[in-house]
Image (cartoon, rainbow, N blue to C red):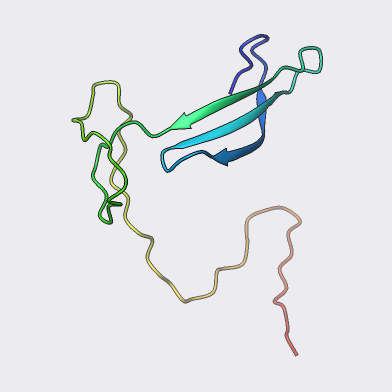
Length: 102
């Protein structure tokens, strides 16, 4: 998030949930010459794809995708692989030694 005054980056100090659909976020400007602090709100406003486990207490309009909506490929859960991860490789000076547990 950019500071509304100096356009420097802002960092999140903390946040708190106000309701099921709204979160309040406290920001701090990273520019020490500015030092602006502010509070923003993040809210969920519409549904693009309905939930497979809907909450009866949540009421959001279901709308068709708009031309300016960000589109992403459908996500699929990652395959579960019980094999151990391969050791890191390809970096100069890296050494891999397996951990031995007694």
